[in-house]
Image (tube, rainbow, N blue to C red; front, top):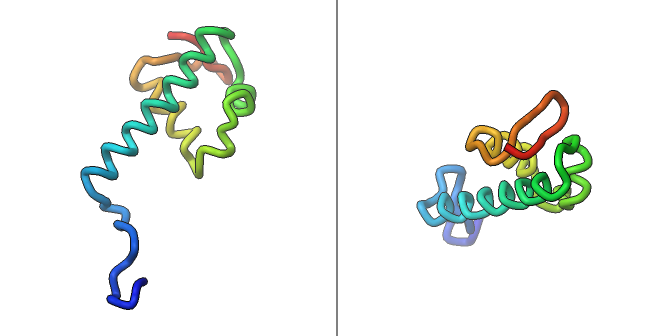
Length: 85
């Protein structure tokens, strides 16, 4: 909290700008995964994460990108692996 009593950043509700920025990042992360799978073919989740450095993306971002990418048809989940759509 600042001295004025207001938090320095928007809360979970956020703003439209926050939602737009989050969507931009999600699209980028899905594209990175999609491009890797197009180039390398089917890969396990762990290998995708290691190759793309997902541990630096932030909490739950990699999991969210995998889930959204499958839902959007960018790539497919096949058992424990992911592959091109």
